[in-house]
Length: 273
Ligand SMILES: [Zn+2]
Image 1 (tube, rainbow, N blue to C red):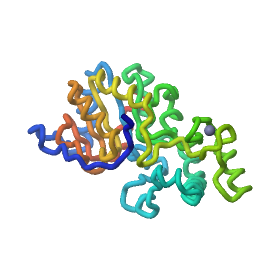
Image 2 (cartoon, rainbow, N blue to C red):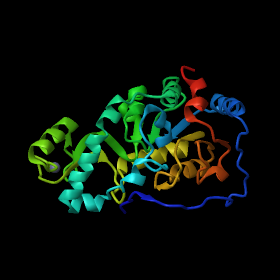
Image 3 (spheres, protein in one colour):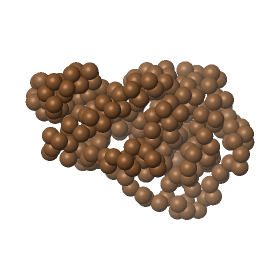
């Protein structure tokens, strides 16, 4: 079965009968998080757009975010329409300075510290910005559920292309280039709405979620599926679940600890530990 990316409000609220532990102030949140990190054997961080906003990358879904101004282009539309492909590439090139200038923030650096200390074997991310790799994770240990926007791939044969190659051809021909190997469209190496999820990433994320003992869901509103299934899966397999996000999320009610404070402020104390 092909699993496709979609937004879904599932409403895990109150199904467990457990009351969420929402911290009252940042200091006690940092302290409780520190205790849970110290006690954990295998930590699995899972990140969404909120961790990258302090790096200048907008959260697509938030008020004022890109998707409220520009409706996302679904995968079927990209495949069917040359105009949709051209529009997708125009938007990507318009974001290039932002992506190229972004550097890892405090959240990225704190998670890289856990990784280097051997506490976290890998990281699952919904982000496409390459900032976990830039913070020190090996590329193989960053499980990208929604792909990566810093390079391109043919949607037919998977051939990789770099963005300057795409841009030069786009500017020359006035339309999005096709693959030189198989003539199918070339797209950023991201997963669009309606596009099949990457099978290898899904398999690895499942194995990690089932074997960790502390799952940290950071900067995700947990409404895009199947990604949002991983915190739930980890919790069901016995892991403790911590949610760190500016806003309430769909799964606060099943979490062991919920921190509704700024991610950089919350994780800053863990940089270099
Ligand atoms: Zn191809």
